[in-house]
Image (cartoon, rainbow, N blue to C red; front, side, top):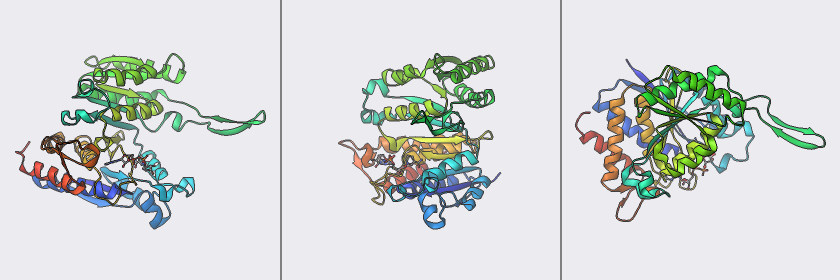
Length: 362
Ligand code: NAD
């Protein structure tokens, strides 16, 4: 059955890195005879410049019609001073909530070839392969009431952390099912000793565990989890948590690998339609120089193949090709170490394409 992918390059290095992922898409399309159509549209600052809106209705319509979206990055100093609701980041937030992309998957994988890039000792992180599942459309980022009001002659800021049982079950199901096909261990992160909302979270996850007897479930307070992630991160397989804790812990986990240019992500709805993007931003400091690392975007494409197109074999082939180019010693500037060969964005993309093309069929 034909699948449709919408390409949203965005701003800064977005178009440069997405170009490389599109090369890889063409290579796997050809090699595996994939029936895929693509389209592209403006988003973020580029869309604001052209149409006065970071998420024009035409882009949202195309996103609704697609099976999956490959996204670059948005934002930059050029748009920092415009009205808050027109800023590029608002476009992305609106896209995620309009498509109900409630499940954010952030793998933190450290290729053994890059163990020296981490700020932690190589033996603590080498071979790291964990997955953080973060609830993305609820919790304190969206809860009402919220605001800043006057009270007793001073300003008071307030937000509401709220999760319904159905929201917890929905994200819990995604996490349990992913744990089932990985290392069969799930750690749920909460602050149940202080916050009632996470007391409910813990109760619901514990209740769900009865239906997943093949998955070993544990619970951890968020402060301990933050500590354990830098002390002994390989103890984890899949972690599941709410929006706020997930935001912080997934950035912490990402940095264990020492290379933001290597980290992909997926945001999925209930039917596995997804938006796939690198974890990093638009890197305005290096945009236009042809030196950005395209591998996070290329591995986001691999996640797209696995989760939205059900082609784990193609995803595996892309990931293997990435590992192969690292093994060959090719490095973009952000992951370069002495003795390796420094290459630019396009050369890195070409090397991944060559590795895919020359590999035996998976
Ligand atoms: P950033 O991730 O863009 O950059 C942080 C640092 O990492 C920079 O030094 C940058 O050069 C480097 N870097 C990032 N990606 C890289 C890559 N692929 N290859 C090599 N080096 C890379 O974060 P920032 O500087 O805080 O934000 C810049 C802009 O990006 C801001 O406007 C911010 O709002 C936006 N942003 C967008 C997203 C998104 O599109 N999802 C996410 C985060 C930040």
